[in-house]
Length: 142
Image (cartoon, helix red, strand yellow):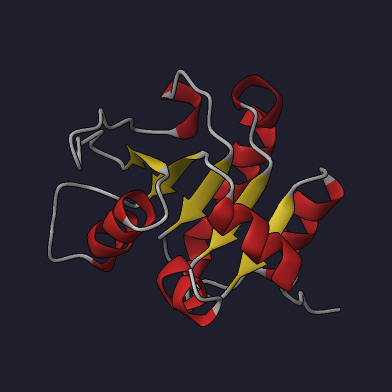
């Protein structure tokens, strides 16, 4: 069965103040993750924590190589990684959920992994898949 996004979950994630760990966010301002994370921070009022293989800082925030390195708290893990790699990020989010306070994973537009989405749901996390906060926010009038 394929995942269907819940509009109430999307609205809650976009309107409740939280810290978002953005997997795939680096200092490269040409990347989509950079602009969307800026939107999440500036328009939605969230704190954004970069997570990338080099641990690069972005938007004035300390970067980390992996979720396990983030001191926390983190409520949402936003996945700007290829669909073939997102399962690993989701599994890391599940593993770190209790320690960091993770309550949701957001798989960006074009990032689809039904099995990973199901694992996250089975672990009690909310899941949003194949859409973007910068699309959903304006659609919801935020």
